[in-house]
Image: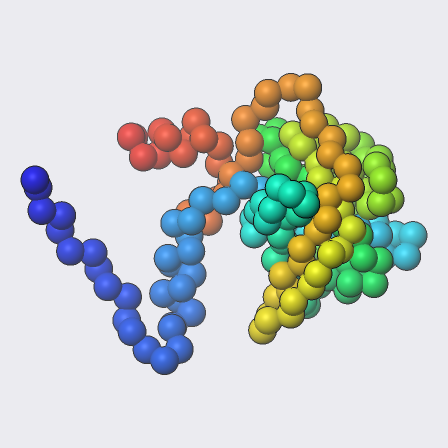
Length: 182
């Protein structure tokens, strides 16, 4: 059996240096979603990669949302959110919701939106949408962990390639494979 070379160890400290954490997290590939809600009557949303299944019975998912943005406050007040799973053709939309200096109204004007059960905005051509009410919320440091009870699901009839985020950029399974073998 071949012996593996030692991995470069990150510095060990009581508080991990932020640059080390960010460098390590760039290696974690994530599916890209847009988390949406309503701020009163105004739609709000953000791009997220920290979304995952929580339980199948009862159907729940988990999303980690930064406390600084208006979207967190709107979710906390409305107690509803939709997780819109993006396909590769949604890269420009992901960038707009990911911090581009445009208003929520401009962001939502870039695509076709509707609603399902909760009233949270859902992207009509998303790969999948999970329409949720907030079941539980835990605030820790800079983020909230939000557990959503799934009330409705919308599935695209197409089998599009998912949009991913890896090494600080948007990608797809195909392009990520080329980077590894390339």
